[in-house]
Image (cartoon, rainbow, N blue to C red; front, side, top):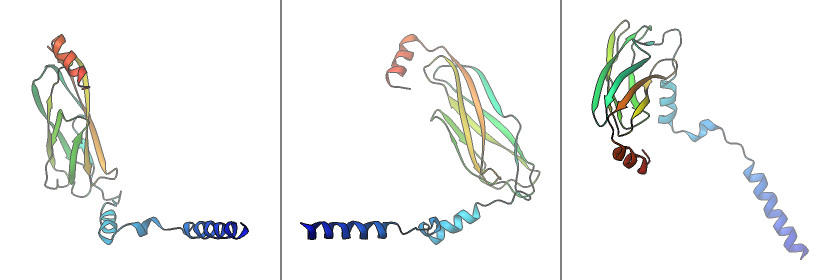
Length: 163
């Protein structure tokens, strides 16, 4: 019995000692991943600055199941070209389209945002997030709409599907 306890204790001790080996987080990344992370580092003194013409856009009253769109204008007020790498929204009903070419210092452009109203009457708010090469790495703005004209049966159906 003592020999079994001794063997079990030796195994536990071996496991405890070998599992305590600390591994650096940087060892978990490939060379390509490390290079990508280095590329994402931005110098605040020379970084681009995305300045939106409006921090939020209100579509006003929008009829249920209809599509509306707007263009959100912006300017690069920084000291290097602005690159928008990606754009997403908090809901699939909101689709942002962004310029794929770098925006030069002092340059302006716009982001097209299309919103498809659902079957729920009332105020809706969605957030658009841009992945950029600014100091923050991302910029956000909101769109809002007051959806009208959905029938009670439409709203009940939408609620039944959890949307």
